[in-house]
Length: 504
Ligand code: GLU
Image (cartoon, rainbow, N blue to C red; front, side, top):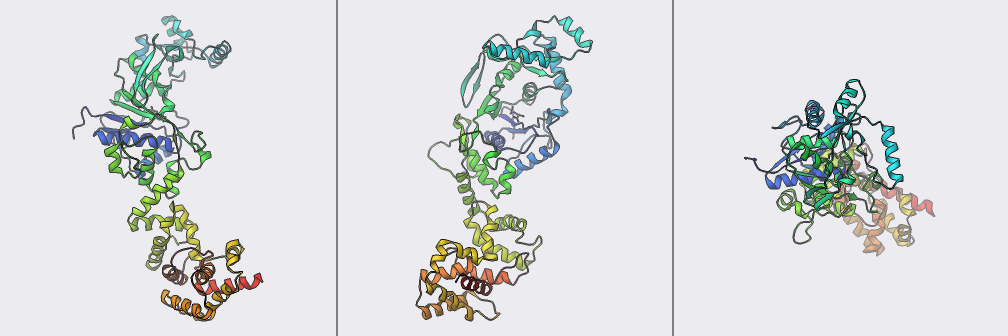
C-alpha cells in the first residue's frame, strides 16, 4: 500500500521500567489510529536518560506490546525509512541541530549553576512571580560566551522562547494557548552534553515525519516548548492529541498502590490480551452511538476515532476488566484456555511440569469445569483446590455448614456412603447416583437435605459443580500420580465422618 500522505504516528517509550497501563493505552490509541487510517505506526525508543534506561526494559516492552497484539511498521528491530529508531544512536544529529540553533541565535549558552538557578527560583516564588528561568544568559555577548566555553566552563544550551503566546491545536482539547510568561527558555542540551527530552522528541518527530503526536496529558506542559522548537527550526508543527490521566477508584493517579499497573502484571494474573485491549480502548474513548462494551480488535479499528477521545480523567474499573475478561475466556477456543490455564496450575504446584497424556486430559477436564467461574486465570488454582482435597474441620467451622449438620439426618446421609463405597473400585457417576438414591430411600432425605450434606462432605461447600462431572474428576484424579494427591470420594467421606465424630 502506498502510505504517502497517510498519517504517521509513534509510540515513544523510555525503557526505564515496566510498561505501565497508561503508556500502553497511549500505544494502543496510536496503533488504532494508524490501523484505522491506513497510516504508519512507529516505535521509537527514547533512551537518552542513560542512567535509568535498560536494555531489558526495551526487550520487555516490545514483548508486552506484541502480547497485546500491537505491531509496529517501523522500529529499532524492524528498521524503516527514518532511522535510527533508538535515540542513543542519534546523538550526533541532535548535536548538529543544536549547533545550528546557536548559530542562528535561536538558542544560547547558559552558564548558570544549579545553585544560582535554585536561588533565582526561590526569589521568584518569594516575590509571587512564576518560578521560571530569568533568561539571564540570553543577554550574554556571543563572543564572550564562546570564549568562556572554549575556556572549559560548563554550559547548557537553552532555546529562546518567543515573545508571544504559544498556540497549538489539540484534537482532544481544542485550541490550547500558553502565555510566554509561563514558559521558561528550556534547556535543550545539558552542560554534560546530553540532549533533553523536549528537544530530541521534536527532532525525531520531525525527522520521522510524524503527523499526529498522541500521548499522555502529563506532557501537555511540555508541548509549548516543543512547538517553540518546531518554529525555531522552521519545521511543520504536527497535530496533538493529549490523552487524559488514568485514575484509581479513589480518583488518585493510578499507581502501584492500586494493585496491578503494568501489562506484565495483568498477563501474570491471567487477563487475556484481547480483554485488556478492549478494556483500555474504552478507558478514555467512547464509541459513537450506544453503550456497547464488547469490541474485538477489528471492530475497534473500524470504530476508533480521536475525536471521540474524552478529555476527562478515566477511572480504572477492575470489575469491568474482569467482566470483559470472563467474556473473552468463555469465547476462547478450549485448547487455548487449556494451555494458558495449565501454566497457572503448574506454577501453583498442582500439575507436574511435564504431564503425560492421561494427566493432560484430566487437567483439561478440570479446566473446562472451573474456568467458567473465574474472572482471571490466576484464580484457577484456588478454585481447583476442591478437586484435590477438602479440609473437613474448616468446612465444619463454617456457620452455614455446621447448621446443616445440626440435623442428625444430615449425618446419617453421609454415613450412608461409608459402607456403600468401601471397596476399591472407582466410583463412577452412575454408581454415585445409585448410592444417593439408595440413601434417599433409606433416610427419606431429599432435595437440599440430601444434597447439601453430600456436597459439604465432598467439597466443603453446599454449592459447586455438577456431581456428574465432579465425581469422575475426583475419582480419576485420585488414580493419577500428581504433585498433590487427589483425595478419592471414599477418603473424603471417611475423613469427614471422623471430623464429625470429633466434633461431638
Ligand atoms: N518518552 C516519553 C515518555 O515516555 C515520550 C513522550 C512523548 O510521547 O512525547 O513519556
